[in-house]
Amino acid sequence: MVSRADRGPIANWWWTIDRPILAACLMLMGLGIMLSFAASPTVASKIGIADSFYFVRWHIIFSFPALFTMIFVSFFTPRNIRRFCALLLLVTLVLLVATLLFGAEVKGSRRWISVLGVSVQASEFMKPAFVVMSAWLFSDQTRKNGIPGFLLAIILYGTCACLLVLEPDIGQTMLISATWGGLFFLAGVPIIIIILFIGLAIVGGFGAYLFVHHVQERVNGFLTGEGDTFQVDVGREAILHGGWFGQGPGEGTVKRIVPDSHTDFVFSVAAEEYGIALCLLIVALFAFIVIRSMKIAMNERDSFTRFAIAGMAILFGCQSMINMAVNLHLMPPKGMTLPFISYGGSSMVAIAISMGILLSLTRRRPEARLSASLPTIMPAV
Image 1 (cartoon, helix red, strand yellow):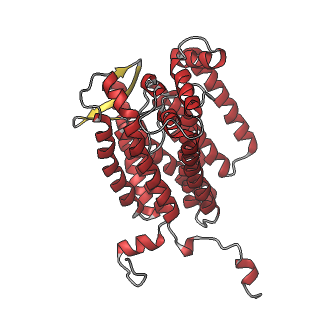
Image 2: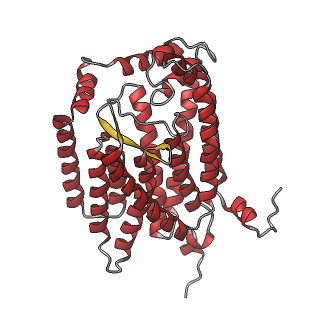
Image 3: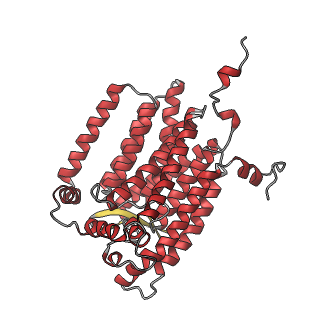
């Protein structure tokens, strides 16, 4: 037991951390390990790996550094979070440029680069750093201290978006655009500027449709049902086959033909084997983290902390929503993982960094919180 009288760093962390958000993150990590046993063995056998639990073992191995990273980052102060994200953003931008120059091309895209023998997707680590630095710039603008925060935030967004489009990675571009747009709105910019950027986003979407071949194929397949729609068709069939309570652990059959069942379509495997009931639990956990984070952000006195918490919640919620919407055939395929549940080392550690930042910024700091009742209890002067 950790005593409240203990003033050590671990005790201080335990009594100030938002334990409900931490518990929800740990539950998602546990569900990810459980679902890896359901989704990964069939993938290993399809690609000729003798050890059917190869991806399961690596999923568990990735979970340990992810958990350590999340807890470690949650010890940071807001000032250290800014410094950490500034350094992380610089490193990831360099890696994104290196990926375009030296990364291996897979299915027409360059998204991975080998660093010390380890394949890294730099865009995954760029996202949390981008959100925090954007929040910092927006907060500087609201403080009116002479720094052109809006202009610098636009330059930062343009740089990151251009690097992602050049890979090309339209899904990640859409994700950071939605998150940045949410922060832009929260920062209180004039409505005419918001309308202008919405117009630019629509033009960018049409441009991606016209000039990026695989985007055009996926959108056409989604709208007309023609072309290569095998992934989403079997993913939806797996969900329908599961019913309310699923076929039972290891009893799924449609999952054997679901492409990327351990990554992009793990939600479909969860539905087939454990039913809609488990899917609703997963949705509830994601929704709980986002809603609770937004509620905490509303009570923050410091504008940077408020924007950063809201940005991380939007990023986490949008990525979760996009993955589940693709599985339900509500939007074209995006190639995006389900946080903490899909297989992938870069994705899992990057999400752990994001949630570590969120846990750090949502720690109880009474001096930083607004009190709704303060004006009514203050004596008249």
